[in-house]
Image (tube, rainbow, N blue to C red; front, side, top):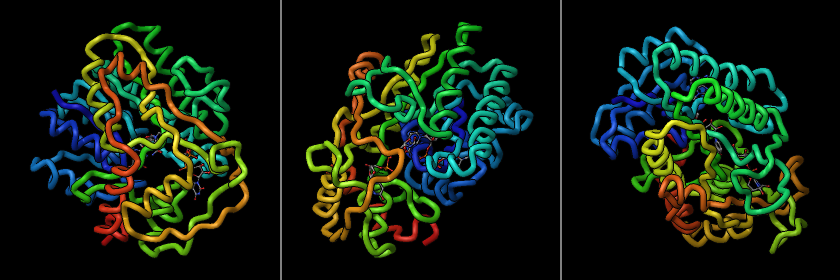
Length: 336
Ligand code: NAD
Ligand code: WQD
């Protein structure tokens, strides 16, 4: 039984490959390396002690996907591949619709034609939009606020329609909150290209001296210290959530599940924890709010615990410790 992992060389995909292999599953990575590095695949092999089959390909290429699904006798797909930068999605919306929506469509058609019906999808808390209440439960109304979020919502809708049309499908829609951290070996981690959009990689690049200071987007939110609050989750916890979801796919259905810790942390709290765990100073200045940012959101995690028997275990200190371990061993990312 082989699991195809699209985007398996990326940040979350690489950590998920490690957890699947450690649990005894055979995996094959399918990635076009648009936002990742083949060295990550070698590192997965170094951590697990297993050779990891990897096919270079694009999820929009349905005939190629069908050939790979058949060649490797795949029984399930974990689908990470896609573009993920919110700001860029407003500048290049068609690239996002093409890669994320058209790519997912081609992948699902390839699966259908090969008779494979088990699917795990990387969705995002961004599909909830402005909170009507917190924590977000899985039945909170859905409302995407930017093209990236709309691609995630469209794919979710496509998956719900697909299951309604054919109850053979087993689909887990996993809504991630804010993934951070790295594998404890320091061999794999987040390696953004260019200027990081997200908080933790930016903090890391300040701590390693690649950037002068962190800009904190807004100090006047109605939160406990005025800075934005998010639910940061360790990427290894997140990867283990996928393993739990894979077991859950034994039962047909189409279910959306939050993967978060249920705890909100402010930007200043993250900076403080990072400085403490890394013993580095992170100079910052408070600048105006970033357009489109929400003041605060975090997950209700009861449903994940009930359905998957999974909950996040690692706290913010461990997230910072492992991020720093990865960053200090790989200050230029995979291109050391
Ligand atoms: P990432 O960019 O590190 O990984 C995505 C991988 O997909 C990369 O290896 C990239 O090369 C590959 N890829 C992109 N387009 C492809 C295509 N057309 N064909 C084949 N491969 C392609 O991103 P990540 O942080 O690991 O995110 C993985 C998934 O989780 C994405 O779908 C993202 O939208 C979703 N997600 C991420 C976050 C986050 O904050 N990191 C939060 C919520 C959801
Ligand atoms: C976190 C907090 C910022 C950078 C985004 C996507 C979401 C999901 C995760 C994919 C906020 C503040 C950030 C910086 C800062 N991705 N910040 N200075 O915005 O919660 O979510 O990534 O699905 O869809 O929207 O994450 O890491 O960008 O920001 O002050 O340089 O850090 O304002 O309060 P966000 P983030």
